[in-house]
Image (spheres, one colour):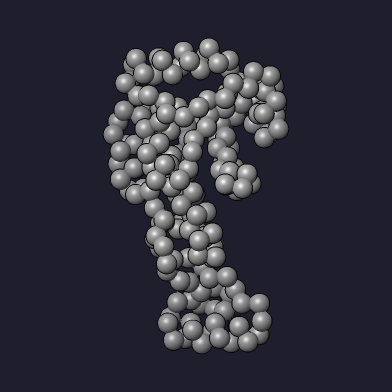
Length: 184
C-alpha cells in the first residue's frame, strides 16, 4: 500500500487508476490506512475493496490453494479502459511488487497500442518498438527494401521503428524516488 501510494502520481501520469482489493474487512482497511498515515504521513489515495468472502479474489484466481485456501497471493492486474485484463503479475506472499516494472508494463501496453506494434524484450519507454510483420509478399519485399535503406531491422519479420509518441511516467525518476530507503 505504501509503495503504490508513493508512486500514485506516476500512475496518474499514465491515466491509470489504482484500486486495492483485500479479503479483509473495511474496518481493517481503515485501520491500515490510518496506521500508515500515523506512522509515515502517507495518505493512501486509492480505494481498497473489501472482499470478505473472497468472491472477487477467486474469480480472478488470486487465492493460491497451494499456499492457503483463504489468503490471497500478491497479484497485479492491468485492466484497460474497455475492462479487458491486459496483464497479470503474480507475486508469492513473501515477495514485494516491483513498482517500476509495473509502470514499465503500463507504458509498454500504451505505447504498443498507440504505435500498432510490439515492444521487444527489455524495452524501456521511448525506445524503438517492433513493427508488425507484413501480411503479403509485396509487403515483405517493401519491408526488406526499407530495412536495407534504413538499417532498422534484421529481416521482414523483425524490424523496428521509433514510436511517434513517447509514453512515459518518467520511470527513472520514479525509481530514484522509490529507492529513497523509506520503502523497505
